[in-house]
Image (cartoon, rainbow, N blue to C red; front, side, top):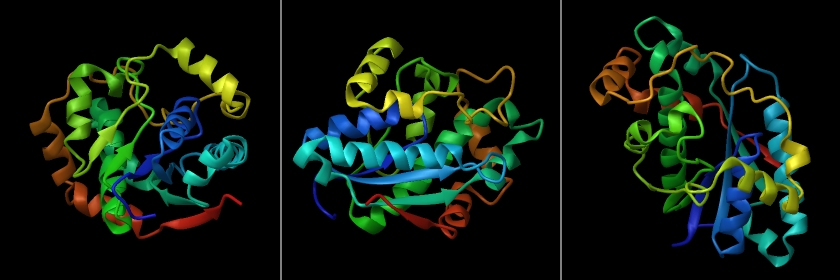
Length: 220
């Protein structure tokens, strides 16, 4: 799928990211979906919902569905994320999580010739998506970030998901906060983030460890 309009889509089992995928596929982007599974901290529910949502989109978007790659790449990140539950880094857990996801997607994207990373991020919806944290998250990526839902409110995204037919698939409790702190930081300190990551070998090494267990699930 290499090309000037190819992106790696970070797709979770939630409501937002399938809507972002649908928007960009309909706009002509080639989508290479990537799921960061939080096993063994969680089960496979989010991964299974991701597969179901993408299979639905491929079949329901007409010819635009062909813009979604026929394989979902899955990397396991649970053990890596657990490193950031120590007292020094736990308040930054969600920012570290998104930085890790971006680093993984960026490295993988370079391998498949992608020019961007696609996310379902929405400004201010959760702690890692505050204006004070988005820049720190984006700094972890070598590729530009596509955020087609950035200015929407949650109800608009839900309404769009209902029209697409992905809302019912994604509905249910989120699992991304399984290890998260009660009071996460809302304004990231880049120096502190980098120091935390350096203690565990640096973000690139953490990303490489996760990518070493990459596996594929078919969407056809």
